[in-house]
Image (cartoon, rainbow, N blue to C red; front, side, top):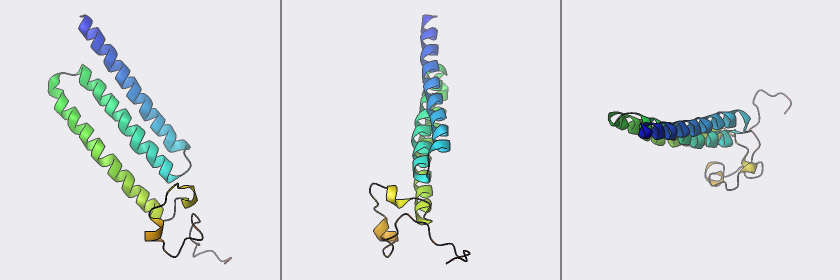
Length: 131
């Protein structure tokens, strides 16, 4: 009986911590100012939160459920960084990222070789009649 109580406590702590990470990821998506920082919140905190919730479920569930939880965890660890990379690259190429705030910009020379003077400014609007 005591073993079940300890397992329940450990599972509850893991699930609560994972839920906290997921909540922080959601708040980061709402509060952070640009695409790059929002991607960081979505990819890192959400993945860590889900892994903690899955670990909490694995502690409490029977052993035959563990392979399914492992597949879910591996799928999350493979897809979240790839998706974040693709969304970040698209945001950079469409100039949705303020390049002046980047600490190191390795893509600037490759993608915008003639455009180093106005880094971080969005492209001119073709429908704008003031220019």
